[in-house]
Structures are given as structure tokens and as C-alpha cells.
Image (cartoon, rainbow, N blue to C red; front, side):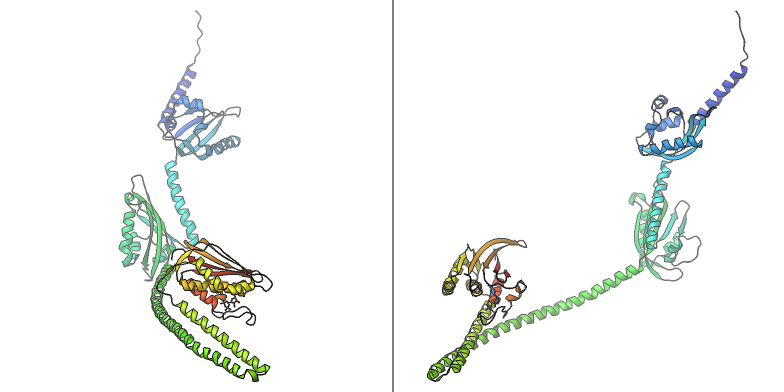
Length: 532
Ligand code: ADP
């Protein structure tokens, strides 16, 4: 037996030392709260410590099979790969914040440091890295950063003062603007008790302090603070209105740790509101007075209207007799003088006759108007077809003379005042005949249809002619008393007819409108409610 002995003491010692140091390293690594890992260039894990396995809740074998990519947040993966690549090229360590899949299925923010390791030939053989869970810190920081950012933004926009109360340290910080709002100029540490609570207006103090007390108890508030109050300037004694907004932050034990917020001067706004309220109050009482006066005037107007109508009625009634007498005696005189009258004298008699006739007509129309102004007490069911037929009978001479074609659709029966409705049709149809064209046969169509207007059903009764018409701008004015659009010589009339029509329609709770075009014709549309 031949034995060759090598002295390997050195190697063994070295190996043992290596094993020892590796064992120590693993112990240390496993005990560390930090995720420690070694990544091979192909993306597989060469080593991860126990903390990493626990973080991911998988075994060494599983992680060896999957590599690192599946544990990255999809949105961070590209950036992480790029950072790795860059650090190899630059042979520099890299540091990056990214999200990793936590064992409960959520992603947590970690901060990773890694260092590429190169072999003798200059090739990367591994990344040695560590990741630390910064999720909590990052979230808190994020909330704080957001709050501060919001304050900064709104401050720029609105001249906010800021306050920052550290409840753990028991300190309070006010910026200059905030100090001004509490009327203090000194730059020493401000205190909650003295400067804040002491600076509140006595009438607002209890309310505000109570709100803040409640704010610090997370279980009864969510920490959001928004309140308006007055301050009394510590040094200048000036009373200012402010609006304060802010938020209380809590730790895991629901203890308030930080109270950050802003204050803004709303004195002008508050004053303006007070002034507006005062003005509104004054105006309201003025308005009430004016309203009272208006009611009074309205009453007087009604009374004087009634008087006027009475007067018009009486006057026209009393005028009828003298006019009848003028007519009678002029006629008699004319007969007595008949043999002796020359042509001019005859003409003068004609003119007297005409004028008396016109006066008589006017008086009749005015009397009619004053009649329709007084609504009868009782309504009755009126068959409008019958009513129109009666009117057509009365007008038959005219109709015949003008060879008018009249079509009458089906008209409804409505509850109303028979004589007034008849008068209405009389005026509309006689106008349609009167204002017809000389060279064209008058065609008059009378129709009904049901229409909806402001949620109510109306009968729309139209009286349409093919007469001379008039310019549309007179469509309203035409219903006013004494309005006449066409020549006095060619067309007789008083200008009262359509005022009577309008009054009748209103007495039936309806309304009237007209469409017309010169040379084409007119369409008078009467709307009467279906249910009176
Ligand atoms: P009048 O006694 O003059 O006919 P109305 O009050 O009935 O008085 O009508 C007022 C004016 O409206 C008339 O003078 C006329 O110019 C115009 N008018 C009324 N009806 C018609 C119609 N159907 N076509 C054209 N113009 C009309």
C-alpha cells in the first residue's frame, strides 16, 4: 500500500474558516430585519436570507426556481431592471425605492441597495443587495408631504398662515402670517395655552377648544378640522375673523401625534356677510312696507276701475238718448228743408248723419264693453257650434254680399257666459268679413283642437281668414281699445271690437293671440281651458 500524504492543513483551515465565516454571516443575515439577497446575472437568486423568505412567505427552493421578477410590482419592474443594468455598466452601486409583493398579497414599499460584484475577468457574477421595508414610513411621509403640499399650494393662492403642532414633543410652530392673525410679533416659541387659546375671542373660545379636544380623539373624529372663529390680537387688540382648516395625524395606538393646518383672514368676508344680512333685513322691511302700499294702491285702483266702468256705463247709457235725438231732429229738419237744400247743404246733412251714426256705434260698443267687463254670476253650458251658427245667421246678408265661404269644424260645449261668447264670435267673424280683399272671395275657417299649455288642456279655437292681414308687430297692440290699423274711410269701425273679444276670453280664464301677414290673411287663436 502506497500512501501519498499531502499537507492540506492550510486548505482545511481556510475552508473551515470560510465555513465558519459563512455560517456567521448567515446567522447574522437571518437575524437581520433587512432583506438580504444575492442575485445572479441570469436573474435567479443565488441566496436570500430568512427575512426575505418570510417577507415573501416562500421556501429557498421556490425562490431559486422563480427568480426575482415575479415579486416586483409590475409598474416598477422596468425601472428596476434599468437601474440594475446601469449599475453594471457604471460599476456603481444603486439605490432605489420600489414595491415588492408581500406575503399577504399586497405590495409594500422597500428601499433597495445593491452592489454588482465582478470576478477576476471583470464579468459580473452577482449582485449583493439589501432591501428595507419602508412602507409605513413612506405612507406617513406621503400623507405629511401631501398635507404640506396642499397647504403650500393654497397658501400661495390665498395668503394662508400655517400652524404645526407636534403633540409628541409638545411644540407648536406658527408662521409669520399665523402670528399676525393672532396679533403677535415676537418670534419665540408659541404656546397652545397662552397664544392660541388665549388669543381666541371670549365668545368663540369654548366652542373652538371643545372642537379641538374632540379632534384629538380618533374614535370620535377622523381628524379633519374646519372652523371659523374670531381672534383678539394679543398686541394690537384687533378683532379678526379667521377660518382654520387642518388635520390631526395619529399613530398606531390612535394617539394624536401631529396637528397641521392653515388659517386665513376672513374678516372682510365676515363683515361683508354681516353687512349683507343687515341690508337684507332693512330691505325686507322696506319691501314689506312697499308691498303693503301696493296692496292699498291695488285696492284703490280696483275701486276706481269699478267707478270708471260704472261711469263709462252710465255715461254711454245717458249719451244714447241725446244722440238718438240728434239723429231724429236732423232727419226731421232735413225732410222739412228737403225742397230748399242745395248740394253743399245736402252734403253737410250727410256728414252730420255720418258723424251721428259713428257716435251711436261708439256708444253701443262702449256699452257692450262695459257689459262684458262685469261677469255674470252664473255660468251655463254653451254649445259653441250653436253660438257660431246664430252669429252666421245674423251676418247672412254680409256673407251673401261678399260670397264668403265659411267652414265650421266641430266646436265643443264649454261652461261659460253664452251672450259674451256669442259676442266674441260675432266680432271675430265680422272682422274677417270686413277686412277681406276686394278681389278675392273671403274664405273663413273656424276650427277647434285640444292643446296642452303649461300642464293644462285648452280648446284652441281658431278663426282664420284670407283677408288683407296686417304686419305681425301689431299682434299685441291690436287688442288695445281704439287701435285701428286700416283706413277710417274704407273700413268703418270703432277699434273696440277686439278689446271686447279679449275681455270675453279673459272672463273665461283663457287667452288670445293672432298670427297675421299683410296680403295673406289672419288667424285669431282663442285658448279656452277645457275645465273651467
Ligand atoms: P274695428 O272696429 O276697427 O274693427 P277691432 O278692435 O275689431 O276694431 O279691430 C282693431 C283693428 O284690427 C281693426 O281696425 C283692423 O285694423 C284690425 N283687424 C281686426 N281684425 C282683422 C282681420 N281679420 N284682418 C285684418 N285686420 C284686422
